[in-house]
Image (tube, rainbow, N blue to C red):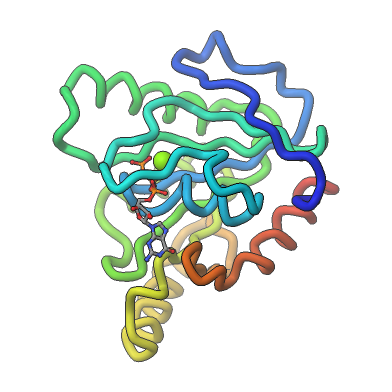
Length: 197
Ligand code: GTP
Ligand code: MG
C-alpha cells in the first residue's frame, strides 16, 4: 500500500472543510511531541511529507494524506501542550474532539504514547472519550530507541494493563521507533488490513 502513491491532500482548520468521507480513514492522535508526524513520515517512507519538529505544538490543523486513493491518513494536532495561547488550544481541542467522535469512515485511531513517559492523564481522558463514542483505538509506543530494553519491558507491561481495562481499545500494543524504523512494517500491515476491510 505505502509503496504506492502517497500525497498531501489538505489541511483542515474547521469541520466544514473536511473532505467527503468516501474512503476509509485512520488517524494519529497523542500528546504534543509524541512523534505523530514522524511516524507518518516513517510509514510512508517520505521524509518531510508530514511536518515534524522539535517544537511541541507543531501540527495545528488536521492534515490529510491520500494513500493510493484507497485510504486517508490524518495527522492530528497534539494535546497537552500548555504554552500555546488558550484560545488556540481550545479551538484545536474542539476540532479534534468533534472529528474523533463523529467522523464517518474513521476505522481506527492510533493513539501514540511516548515510551519514556507511558500513559498520562490526558491520554486517559482521550481514551474515555473514544470508549464513550465506541471508536476503536490502538495504542502505539513511540521513540523506543530512546530507552533501555528493561524500561521498555516495564512500560509495555504497564500499557498492556491499561489496554485490558478499556472497552474500545484494540488488544494489541504496537511498539515503534520512527528513528530506527522498529515496528513500522507491523504497523503498515495493520493499516493495510484496515484499508481493505
Ligand atoms: P506535534 O505536531 O507538536 O503534536 O508533535 P508530533 O507528535 O507530530 O511529533 P513530531 O513527529 O513532530 O516529533 C517530535 C520530536 O520527536 C521531533 O524532534 C522528532 O525528531 C522526535 N522523534 C519522533 N519520533 C522519534 C523516534 O522514534 N525516535 C527519536 N529518537 N526521536 C523521535
Ligand atoms: Mg505533528
